Amino acid sequence: MAEAAPVLPEVAEALDALLAGAAPRLGLAVSGGGDSMALMHAAADWAKARGAALSVATVDHGLRPESAAEAAFVAREAAALSLPHETIRWEEGRGAAGNLQAAARAARRRLLSAWAAREGLEAVALGHTMDDQAETVLMRLARGSGVDGLSAMAARTEAEGAVWLRPLLGLRRADLRAFLEARGAAWVEDPSNDDPRFDRVRARRSLEALDPLGLTAEGLSSTAARMRSAREALDHAAAALAAEAAREGACGEMRLAVAPLRAAPTELSRRLLRAALARVSGAEYGARAEAEAALMSAILSWRLGGGRSLHGCLIRPDGPSHVMLAREAAAVDPAPMALPEGGAIWDGRFFLAARAGENGLVAPLGEAGARRLTELAATGEWRAPAHWRAAPQAARITTPALWRGEALAAAPLAGWGEGLTARRAGAGWPGG
Image (cartoon, rainbow, N blue to C red; front, top):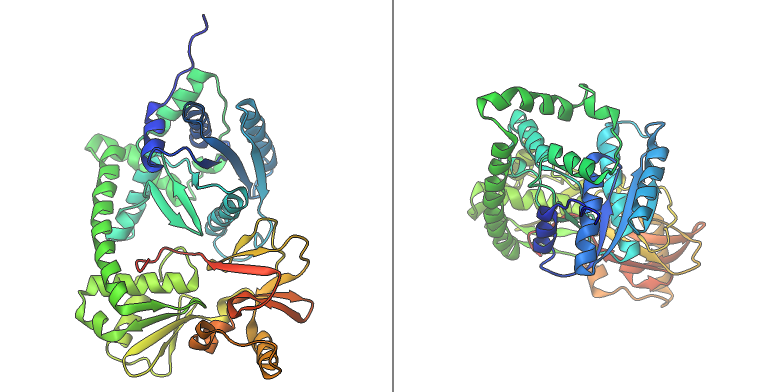
């Protein structure tokens, strides 16, 4: 009798806990490296036992000559496990200036989120390990991070309109490779994992050097877990403050009452402002701490003047006791985009879907679109809904619209036109 293949019961237990025992349609992000390949094999065992459906995706960033071959390797390995696989290429924005690694990470998250929406997946599982967690904590210690930074990666998060699971956070990288070797399964090694130009590689080597002193991956991961508990308590308190002080509008704007911010502990008012900036901008991360603190000081002392700009947002006084945050029009990419079948996240804030066969392109409504709506209102062809009238013009012009050439075809948040639907997505918000 053939010997049974080794299993990773920790992965099954983690997935059961993260999914509350349900057997959903789950996505797996698999690059071909040892961690994600171990995830795919272990999740396949779990899905077979639970009756769950799995789909696999590989994002090919095209940054290395080997990337296409690695994606093809994952496709073959997935097929051997009877799992559907899709290779998603990163094209848009790859040549932009700036931090290429950060841009690649953001693109991967965005592309996987759109894939999950197209496939109807309840969540996407990622291959982050205890080693990744420890390296993240060490890097953030070096940057002087507080509670949020040191809480590092959570086992379950929601961002970019998708649910992300990390069922390998309790496992070491070496154990996952031993599991693959015992099954006779292959993986690929990314040469950048040994390139000392990258912070994470230097953190990995530092952990190896610090291990004899007792600063271990297990200890740093325990610190992250305790900081995560502290963060959850602070987030709970911030949610209560948000319920009192913040109101989100249908066009993505946020109205904050100043008095509750003044009365709250500094940490809570800071957390609420950070979350509001991330929500309005559609950014995954908050603003720089120093700039955020300066803005909070200006708000609480009512020294905003005619308004400020930060993190892709406009912050202006709104009456005698409130401030309004709206998306900054100059920060929205004006380039028209074709929506893939199944829809996509746009500007980090809205999930858009076009009707089948639609050949129009999506771009911001802008001043031109706003003028067209005014013309339609004057002829009685369109009546502005209450939520549109309540939103500031600065927020309206940053909403998505469907264009056919220079003609406005649809402005879904304004309740006009057909061919495009929009719903709110984006960064987590303590107000719900």
